[in-house]
Image (tube, rainbow, N blue to C red; front, side, top):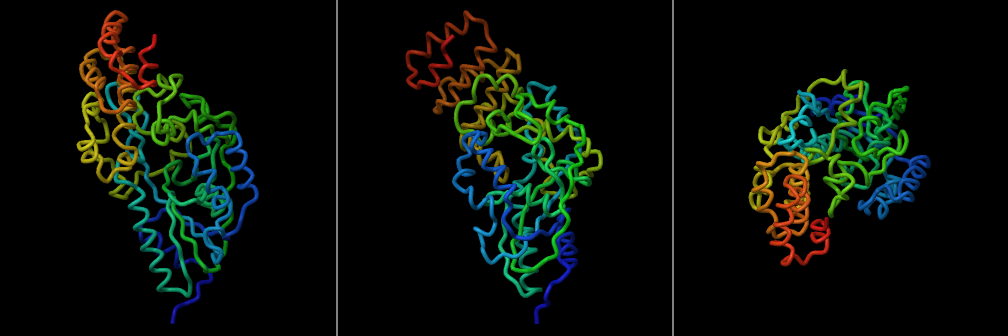
Length: 372
């Protein structure tokens, strides 16, 4: 006969056995404070193109709308602390800087597999039902992790842990078990605002508030179209995401390098050459980033980011590779090639290219990039 769980200690132990580094319990209940914060975020338009935040507003503000029978939420974290300083590559303009979380295997798959293993064990051990969620589901993971005692949301709005700093992947299990809730974590940011000061695009209107439309992670990953010109120089060589506000957090000094093999960086993603990446067609892009979170944004958006980085490189030797993208099948790629060339060649040479290519260009956004 299945046991009836009362303390949650055995669940914590099993979670740690499966590789989870942080475990917390909280009641599956609505949170009016969370609901109001999300509402203000959406009303200000800070979500940009992420329309699913608005569409799933009710679900995100109340987990019971996803599953009314749920009694408790188990919030879990896996450490992905890197071995090396994440910001070192920013000083190498010919190298593509990829966010730490995307340098290894796609964390969604790793986390989901472990969550299912834990959920399966819970179901066979106790009298309950469960549902598993990773960040593709409409749950506000960081506020749940705070309520479950795993960490707090810092001034950069990301989760911070006293043990793991800024480097935790999050997932949840909803269950019909009545588990004793943990004490929510308190805010330990104090007067520090290093995360706000370092942001290249000033994406934080004030502490604990993010305007995603200005965030490099949003612009290079979530945003599907043309990146506004006012942010391109600040992007530097960041071709997928941005770790600046995470990396400078003083609490990272307590974090230990991840022991999870899947989160260790793939060799080809640590310091890829921009001039090599810009040559990728769709097939080679898919092969190169198979099993990586980068594959999700597709080749055209990725090359958009690479071309912006090349334009910021100041290296005239990459001009031939950039010029070849003027005839790319994607107008998004062509437009960013124009912008990059304007940064890399003199006015006279650029004008000659304009005369050669502009008459054949029909896309309005690309024509806009040609305009001086």
